[in-house]
Image (cartoon, rainbow, N blue to C red):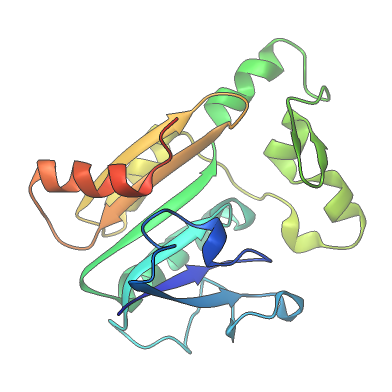
Length: 201
């Protein structure tokens, strides 16, 4: 059985990851800075000392990297690389600022653009963090940095990943997905792996 690290899992579990990771072939290890989320490992993604070098077949990080300050992002990426084995890869997703800004240009900063299980979400929430969560004292839920597809891809490559496949989704999703590999592989193989993990729309 392969093992993936669910980095910055929050309340999510294996069921909220990707079709590949949800299969019985994968074992999930949940890691989060908030002990209330009951992760297997309580830790920041910027310093995952409890996770051994090369011990993971994959890392999954969803809507976590935007909660880091810009200077912390390279620390997290280097940690993702460190815990992956030589054949390992990262699947990461975060808000797409390019898509969100298209609404801001239309002066829709505070107008709901979709409804999440927690309630209506406006471009302001995607940029800076979901206001009701932050207002309840969850300051770690504030957004401290942001990405477009181009910037996320460059950031992953610049900080050590060999290859990156990516996609972005417009509203109502407003997100980016990237799959980054620790070692080089044929483009066709990379694209097939990304298709297996990325949403179909």
